[in-house]
Image (cartoon, rainbow, N blue to C red; front, side, top):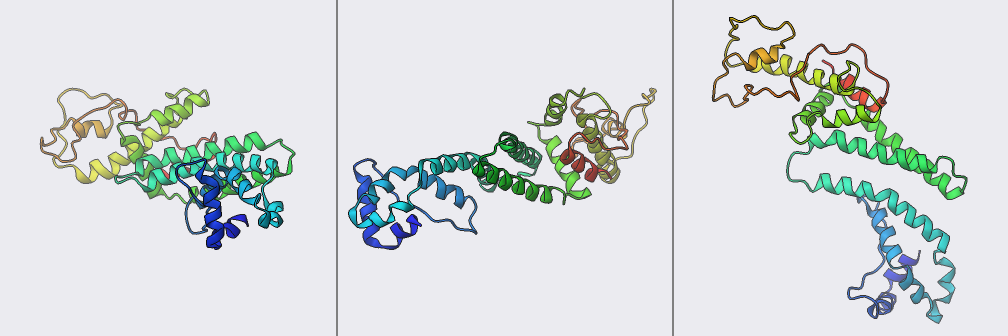
Length: 283
């Protein structure tokens, strides 16, 4: 309400700016929320918190004494500061993704999980609080998490496999994120039921079925030596005399990718969102 009172009248705007000139080099005005603009609520709260002392100075003018009851109390400023801390990570993710000029598909698994972890942390901190504003904030974060889960559950077999493939092919990630998940749950990454093994095998199965089978330039040349029974068809293709000018370059072997290819038939239930993505990726 104070924002409307200050910004709509030129005289009030000038008086508000005059209240800042002795304290800051760059003067600003309060801003209003815009429903169709990302992060506008956070920007409104940050600007209001920054100008809280200036707003009180402006209200000290005798002609504005009737508006003083509208000023935010100290307890309310505490709530504003807490809400700002809750919302800031979402601005980071939205701006970071929207301002990129390159492919961002390989970041999506990490971004989704960071958002879920952030909301779980906030809900965990507020879960047993009995103060009304903390209960309200817990409910708001819970609704936001349900909204995000709704989008996450719309992952299809095609999009799920694209997310996994892009994530694993990122040279800065490969299987490190999945190993981190396993480590956080005290699971051996080498176990058949670990996320590392299952995501790896889902990726290799996709490569074997959709890439090697459709884009192989030359027929597989069987080696005279006896091959190990566990050698995957992907390894056989990579050793079979691929053309040196093959733009897909299947000739390199990386231990991060090449492992046994028997995809587990059941989905682990340790993490619903990770299990859902893995299930959607199965072909």
